[in-house]
Image: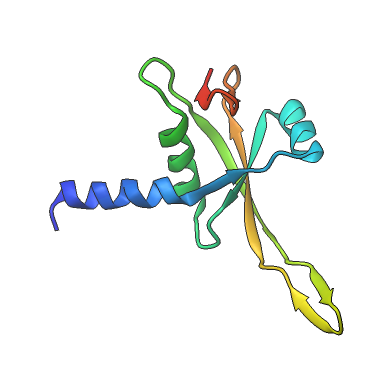
Amino acid sequence: MSTAAASTRNTERLMKVLLAPVISEKSTFVGEKNNQYLFRVMSDATKPEIKAAVELMFSTKDKKVEVLSVQVANVKGKEKRFGRFMGRRNHWKKAYVSLKPGQEINFAAGEAT
């Protein structure tokens, strides 16, 4: 396989790794305290893939986002009752992404500053 085709496929994979930012009271507190951002990621995503995906998605021509570290946590789905039947929500993975000092991600504008 040629390197151009491999890099295209790799870029497509990185575009799918980040599913959504986790916007909650806890994530806001963590973000302000440790300069970290929480993302919901694919369940088979690795730390290097998450790092590359954040740098790819939030870097612009004039601003480059640099990730310092990535920590991941597997979140177990809650058991829920539907009438007399028990069910379970899906398990998912979240990533705590630390940026280098002086950098931030603005989700409202969809860009890094």
